[in-house]
Image (tube, rainbow over all chains, first blue to last red; front, top):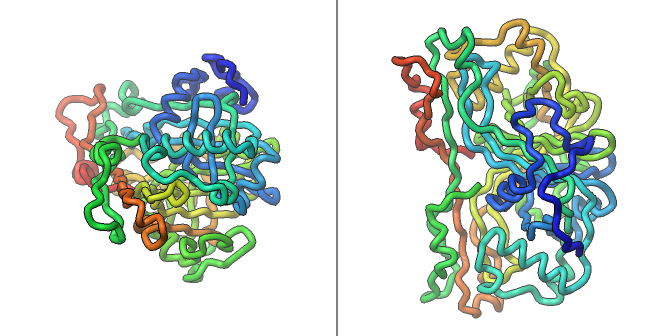
Length: 226
Length: 226
């Protein structure tokens, strides 16, 4: 594990240099971390048999690496450590409704992380990575739930992707056609915002009587995701 | 455009055959259509210079094809028509909180569509595809907003991906460890649901006075996405 501090500015590589719409691109590590902290679902892109495969999966991060996990039998995870992957995390904040169809868009925050992941095999490191993943989706849950057995650990593949090469794109604000000729058209323009939030915990029907949801779960009801 | 009816069952190919957790996999076209109808953001996976690139973008569908668009200068769109792409649409419905960390998961509905997209160049077909895309994200908006000029059309690349090869995965319900020894642990288990919904329209600060948001936009406030 490389625990040396990562630079505050991400490198502009051939893959992460922002070519278009530069105002939306960022190489700021703080912006990357904020996007990763806000969610827990990513889309993992791998090349399998020459074609791309985009798999939704949960992730965790400790600021140095991004962790994804799955069954040790998974095609996408087995293929991943041998080649470059692209992990994309996206939060959608609203529809940008312009006067012209052409200027329509989406307000979003997105991070694309490139790299060759490492299959984590060391027991302690694997436990730490899985803790990070569990805590990222549900803070407090690693200590609350039963932790993995040796057999469960063996059945789980954990990949660590260094947070070294990444591209951040953020779009905020209203449409861009308010200062052109289209502004005279009398067409409404603005943003239709979108919000994702947690609802109320739904107990497992098989739950034994008398077991109530702990505060670290109930406290999330009504809070925002993303 | 192939407008012959598509079969109600999707073919099980090497890419779409469900190998693990079979109960979550589906080859039902109605399930695919329901997932596509519920959202408007996908993750487009392409191979660029040998590595995967996963780009968040809006999509539309007419039940035969899935449409994505972007700048005619976009790397991911220019690379796409020459090779297989994977388009993934994911709706996250909640965190599955089990008694054991190992049984934790996510309730979700996801579709992965594989194929080689076609660059749409015919003017009428391109307009129809862009209409489909605009209407999919915001029904009523194609007729309400100013439609593309010839120049705007030329600056837009539109790809059509046939809905022929796709894999659907759906997970619903509570955790799976309610009937094993972990059920005796006294740990709360259940689902923490997540919902995404539209907020109230936010007018562009540059909007001229007296232009109010039309009903097809205001009616969406409070409605669910995904």
